[in-house]
Image (cartoon, rainbow, N blue to C red):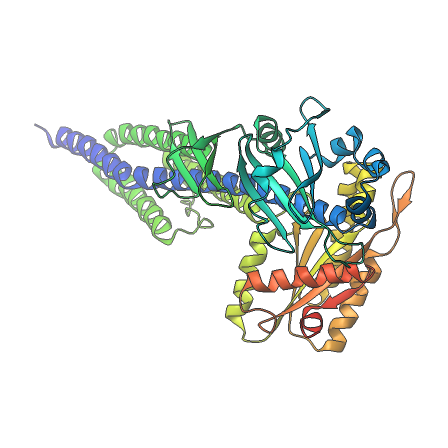
Length: 507
């Protein structure tokens, strides 16, 4: 056999082996990364769903605190004046509150009033006389309660907020407990799914003895991944599973990209057959070897910003391959950044979310032993703006407030985040008291300025709670809890002001 044909055979075999080697190394790595990205995407969806449920639970708590610390509610528990029910507990009110039931219990945990509402059918419903019985266990013999819980009853799982009833100024003694709740039913799950653009289903888990993770993700086929979220009731004896599906976009895209690489390699191999050994070595093998090394380096580095160095003055299939790989890497980098944006930033205001705040808090505590200052503020009057002008205006107001406060925060190297609803967090490095109070006053002043929209204007203020790490807590959970407590103390003192946690903790 002539050397020419031997060269052809060698080139063909070499091309096949090279393509096989290339695919055996790169294809599993690319597909594994896509599987991990799809899993991260599904976990992100699970966090969004879980966050929405927790947000609903927190909103119930805020709503309950507004109603339970109200002179009219306090007086109603004493005199059962029917005018209170007529004025405050009509069908339209429960529709606006978006709750399924409200229970008024006296100090003996006996019902004074039970109100039910069917949000799906938009009508009041009568509750059974013993409806309250399944909700009194969390109260027990406690004289005061303030909790938001998941409760299992014969009607299924519910989100329920418990608050002791006091006067508007916080005075007592407590005259009972107010329970406000929402059923975790098809209507609620469907509403959350529409809000988050996710299809969901739920059912009760009967086998609670086997240990299970809160989040579980598994691929059900090449196109979809199934995720599950487990919710425990307050007694930890009952479990609910919420399931959802997400598209495996990363896997599909990666698989298509790998297939394109395969085609490109076979085309390159056909060209190699008709080239001389000299041209093969100088213009083909060397370039492919260089390309393989760069890809291997990118694989080892794991840096999404790396790109293939394209060969100069060469315009052939290999240069197209280099361009396609760079396009693929650019696409992967873009998708990766989109995932990070969804996971760490609030879609409405563009501010970092609570998860980003946790990361920044941890980064600053690791970088410096100095104290950190946490501001937790809530908007006074925002609910009235939402109820009066609608959520669209409420969203515009949140965006404007975010921009105003952000300028002040960033001027002091602050890190502002939207915690949820109309609540915000700001993280500052250590500063002296005089400087801190000046910054807080500036925030109160800029929030309190008038907001002008198309045909009207409005005003809101803010109540700010301040806690200092590590003085007011050695963990982020303690610091946030104490800042939240100080913020509610600012509200109780008349709103539009700030309160340091250490001042009230020393009282």
